[in-house]
Length: 361
Image (cartoon, rainbow, N blue to C red):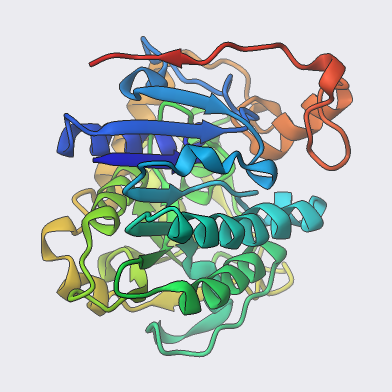
């Protein structure tokens, strides 16, 4: 079996690669990534990519389609991956999250790939906290990031066929520890703030709803998507991924962190303008289709793991929102250093030539 993971050097990729290697020890795993966040490593002892057979560096907008030769499954993780980044880089968000994804899927089908797994998002439900949304409910994307996911799903659907299964995993908001940690996610931000500044400042009134999922449970769902057969949901499937136990209001997340991190203070802003990004999600379909791939981590276990890991990293700077663990900050720093142009392309004369390295297992 040969699996291509596109966008493997981000927050989700390390766990996904580890899960796929564990499940398919003899598979050929190939990573493809532009390398924006290659240096955003935590206190890991080794590069996550050593679990791959090959790591290829490149821009998905200029994908070398010969890499699809002999591939059985493609996992598409490449993305401008949150609302603040998509607001700054809206055109690039649509190009990477949507257009490049659809182009790759079309060529993958031509190359005989059997399974295409797309990392989608529950954020496409937008302003929808009146009741938990199912896959049949109306989509109300409020940001460029959410719109890019909706557009990709809509153009992926007609590509699915008997010999080309497409699985769109509408992930809940990610959280938890990763070899390439992000602290620009709501729960991760709260834990870091509680540790480093002894306070959690909620910019809203704390009432918006969010479904959450541990990043390692995302990896488990990706494994399911790779092996999913059409009998479990059809040739094309868009499915909410998470658990109803993880539908929380933002303020409840903060108070849960306060229970585990000693001595931190929680403040809310009761006068804040309403945050329209509020949604509860129904996960019954995922539970029925993937009973053996249900989330294993709960909120308190995830907070405890983040707490212990961040403490172990020995981070001292309370201004962590300007660190390499904030994705928008990394992109801006690369641009300010003259390494990336305004379109987020590597500037050729600044690039370091890298030889491809193959790892034997």
